[in-house]
Image (cartoon, rainbow over all chains, first blue to last red; front, top):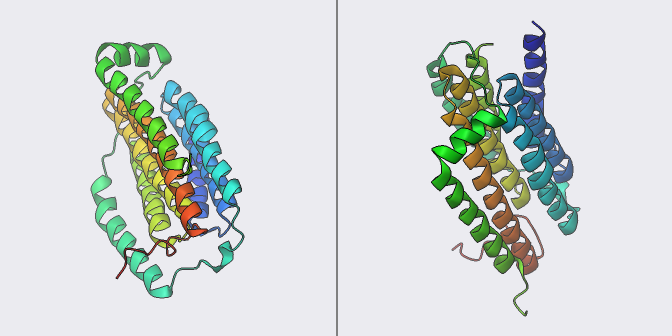
Length: 160
Length: 99
């Protein structure tokens, strides 16, 4: 009962903050509402027994990646954000497209079933990750290294 | 807890991300919309992992997080060099290839 209550609270937070990302004109506040969205999703992960993923979501996603995005927004510091309203025809076209997508998708998603108690604890997650998926783990490390080198090469000034 | 609601929630989040990418003219906010879409996919994967009692879905979510971190780092570097070239982060500013 208590879990249901917390789940519906978090679901409302997710709905509200994802709408806020779409609708708030100020980029800073839109990104901060994405941080709130990520934290609420981390709470849902914890309710679905994915404990390790909840912790990773809070530390890596909401902590590191979003702080990077906020740094770039503060660095660029554009003040002319209120002029960026899209034209009405694009707005209605995109909304119609998305509502069509929802209309097709929602009835096909009725995969009703209860959440099982699969344990996503650090122990079981780590055992699976380092036994069955160890090659993928190494490739992910190489991908992160390549992305880091690429970001440095793209981001530096052309002179130096 | 019903998994149905989790998948519908992730569907809604994905649509909000798509609309953010389509309608926002700020390139940083387009990146934020991509993060929202990736997060919606992660939520549905965790829901289905819980529905089927299979831990591999959570491993997939872990790798998607790795790819999202790499993508956001490279994307922000591209946005910074775009800002240096055009003095703006509006996506209409970078229209050199438009004819």
